[in-house]
Amino acid sequence: MCQSIEWNQHVYSFKERKPQLPVERRGQIIMAKWKGYCTIETLKAGHFQGQRAELIEIPATRGYSGGIWFQVRLGMRGVLIHGPAKEFCVYMLVAASTHYFKTMTGSARMPVLIKQII
Image (tube, rainbow, N blue to C red; front, side, top):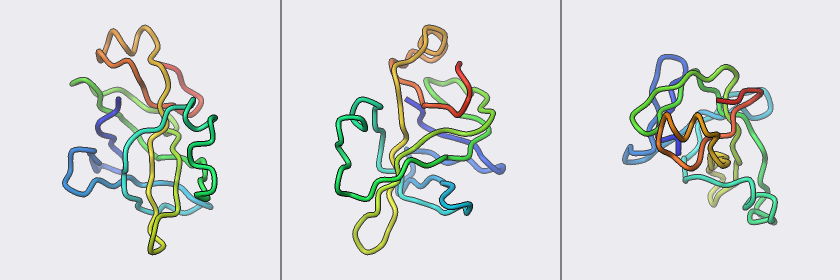
């Protein structure tokens, strides 16, 4: 799993007390609560059905997993949920790791990158 990202010279970490991620929504960057991870299988199974879920982009230049920083070209995919009190929550979209990513980081899951495979 990707525990941190870097974007715009700032590191966003899931280990922060109140983790947040930047997300691109309708051409604008907003900050959303980072609630965790969502597998492609979970998304396809309709887990967020009825919650006004949106597939969004998470801008990132680097990601961090298993003690390793890796380059991100165009960003990552995520699922944005409209939470209570008009707040936004984001889940990073993850898939089964490629052999290389698993060897590099030790993680069985990796972020879904935009037009990039590691």
